[in-house]
Image (tube, rainbow over all chains, first blue to last red; front, side, top):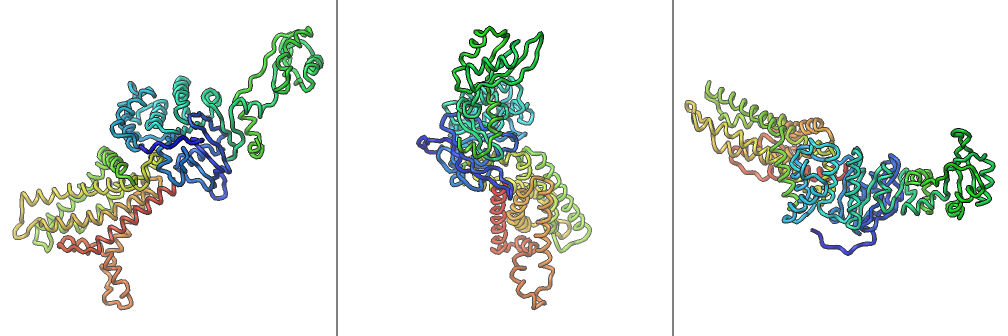
Length: 329
Length: 255
């Protein structure tokens, strides 16, 4: 194994990373980092440049300009050393069909410089961690289901206990049970290794990741913790209110509590009840008192609920932004 | 290139070759082809005395398995791995591209060598059973050894060309076709050089030296005659190095 390097500030660092294919720019000026032990979601619409970025970081593709570093080692200048610190599972997780799972993992362990005396122990450990021991270890990879193939890919990524794991769509094509299993596995890696994970399942990313990096058309549009991004990208709070009051009455009450409040036109539901959407600034104290204000005014009220903005809303807001706004933030 | 990775990769490639149906099909084709050629050469010798031994005649047709079997052996080495994506996965490990290329090359060359060694069982068995027909010897150990040396040494370049062609495409069939064309070009140029009356054409005098290097069939005769000339050795080894160097660049460039 390689010498133990001092822990760098960033386990993964992309600095002004650019990749061009002729006149087509796949990614441009991409700068972000992943701290050691951090789990980061890498998000973007299809064709945004996620896989290209991951391939450059993993050393399987050269960037046009910029710098990619893994554990402080430049991927372009010292690829072999960078690869010793990192494991990468590509999007479609290509595996040799004609090898048995255990044979494949042994081969990969040797290629990843796992100590000869440790190969068996590491292979058994990752097969145990990925639940491959009983049902898949002796089977040909070509005969495995999609879920087990993904597990083999993740087991391979964890074999050499790398400092950085890059997973491109690790749960694609899996059923909900399998997704839960993979999610728990990734969660268990927090603090042990830096994980950069791309996924279209935003709910999953929100549950697993400490931070997200969002790109669109090859440019960075947002990065940070979900709560910070929520405050930055969605600077308002929405309430669903079901009442018999008219829009004018409701607006009058809401603006009395918060002058900047707006009420969107209601939708009649049944027996004279209407559903309205009240929007307040995120930092307004009226957020805490809106329900009591409306009840105190004797408004016929059947339901009031604050909308919870998830990563999906953050993602949609971020991908509507221009790259310049993303950089400024 | 670390030797540790190279050894691991070579062992994996040899194991894959041993378990591959493609290898066994190629071996069957090779042995059927060479066995057939040797059988007809023996038949000719049994009808009338010939100025050549059956083994010599068989080795003179070395280009037939070279063109028909070698492309089948090397076509999948990189093309198939690129198509399935497993080459990308391999390149995410600390193993260098050079180690991967050399391991695939050596595995294919050893398999090619094993084919030829298996073929030698035919003349050995014939020699053990019959020895001579009339006054004519059916096998000559010097020819056998020289011919084998020639196919193994020239095989360095031929297999390396096959590996290079396999690096250039994701289609194994196209890789086989490219290998066939380049090997045909190489042996045809060599054959043409020998048949041209360069000595009598003074204006072609400058071609004498390169022609002496490229005369493939002449090399076979030299080897079979026990002449160890360093020029073909240099040609085949440098050609192999160049092809494998280009293969490394091709793999790194495409990935």
